[in-house]
Image (cartoon, rainbow, N blue to C red; front, side, top):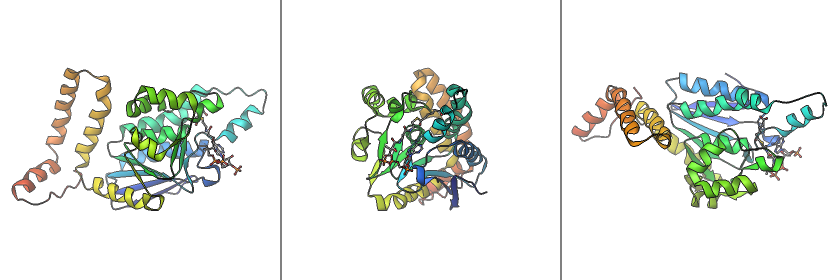
Length: 265
Ligand code: T3D
C-alpha cells in the first residue's frame, strides 16, 4: 500500500510508519490524518505486525496541525470552522487507535514534536528521543487548548505541575530535560536513533504479543480504576493470555532451561 504523506515499511514483524512531509516539518494536513487513521487500523488487523515504530522524515517528528490549511480557511470570511468536529473526525480516531492497538508502539522522536505532533508522540507507548529532539505544547502559541489527548497523557507522564507549565508557556523542552521528568524513556545520539529504536522494536516483536497487548490495556486503564476493578481486570486479561501458545511455550522453555520462542499466538 502506498501513501501520499506516509512511508510504511515492514521488516521482521516490525512496521515503521514515517510521517513524510518534511518541508512543513511533517505538519498534519487532512491527507496525513486520514492516512494515519487508516494505517492504525491496518496495524491492528495484520497479525504479522508485532511492534510499531512511528517517526518523522527530515529534521522534525511533527510540527502539529498544518497551520497553512487553517490560514487558507480563515482567509475566506464566510468560512466557519468547527474545530470540535475536526478533532472528532481527524485526530481522535488516531489517538484512540494507537492507545487501543494491542501491540507496542514506539515513537522515535527525531526532532521537534509540537502541538498535535507532540500529542501523537505521547499517544505512543514508549518514546526514544534523539538528543536533537524537542517537545513543545505549541497550542497556546496559536490560542488553542492542547488536544489529541495531550491533556490526558502529559500529566500522567510528567505530573500535573510540569504539564501545566508546558501547556501554559508553550516553551520548548529539550530531550535531556524531557528524560529527566519522564516525558521520554531514553535519549540517544541523533545518528543512533533509528538503530536504537529498531533494536528495541525487534526485541519487543519477539515477545508474547497477546500478553503485551493485554498488559498495555491494563496499564492504561489503571489510572481510572480502583483496586478491586483493577484486580478483576487483571483476572479477565489473564484468561486469554493463559490460553495462548506463547504462554505454554514460556512454561515449557523454563523447564527445558532454554530461551522461549514466542510466535505471538
Ligand atoms: O485543526 C484542528 O482541529 C485544530 C488542531 C490543532 C492541533 C495543533 O497541533 S495546534 C499547534 C500547531 N502547531 C504549531 O503551532 C507549531 C508551529 N510551528 C512552529 O512553532 C515551528 O515551526 C517549530 C517550533 C515547530 C519549528 O521551528 P523551526 O524554527 O525549527 O522551523 P520553522 O522555520 O518555523 O519551520 C520550517 C518550515 O516548516 C517553515 O516553512 P518555510 O518557511 O520553510 O516554507 C514553516 O512555515 C513550516 N511549518 C512549521 N510548522 C508548521 C509549518 N507549516 C504548516 N504548519 C505547521 N504547523
